[in-house]
Length: 295
Image (tube, rainbow, N blue to C red; front, side):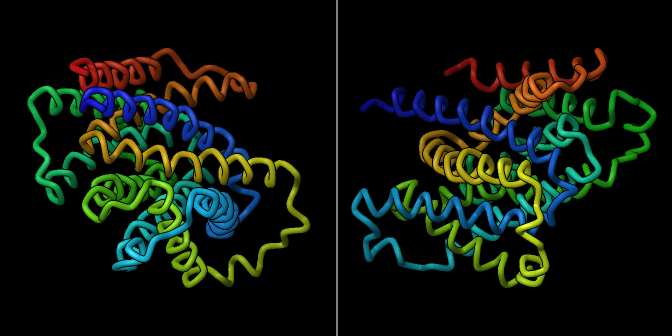
């Protein structure tokens, strides 16, 4: 199989990733204030772990070599746990569109971590794309208010999620750095189990304090979506793509997220964002085109 074919498969995986992950912002925003973020992340990881474990078992199980250096899974799982908990903490006060715009800053951080961990060099074209995408993201995050942008008046929700985005950006090159030949499925399973250990160690009291029987049906419906599509499926997709594409290009697909989120919001009955906000979305799409046109 040629390198070009492998790269194209990586791009296809990330296209699917961007659509599925966008749903987590729109659906997650509707339950963010109905359940504790740690409890929600824990239960979605339990479900996702069960799904991935079943698939791994059907495909031959885990090799002894896959268990080497288990600290690797703790690092990866810890980064993902931080990201998802802070995502839903941020969605308590920030809109799905502005939160997804914060997510589009991930390629800039990923490029930095890619150089730090893998010595991946950012070309002039990539730097231009990241700059344009970053400006578009900031335009949406600050709601097209230049005075708020100049004063750096960042909302609490956006600020909380920004920390999570940094963790997610580190995750992408870290997978490539720490993977020792494990398949995406096996590596995902190890990461999920480690993330569960981290979450339980940190917030077992929150999990126990949640009245699971009293949760409305919408919480369980969204949790299932998050576990199956926005967790189990997207974890495999991003790891598959990370082994075939540079970190900055993997994360470039986050630029599609606000557009997908607007689509999800319209389907769910929300009003379209103001025209000025759409200008920022357009800049993120230009950035995506610049990053991917050569492929």
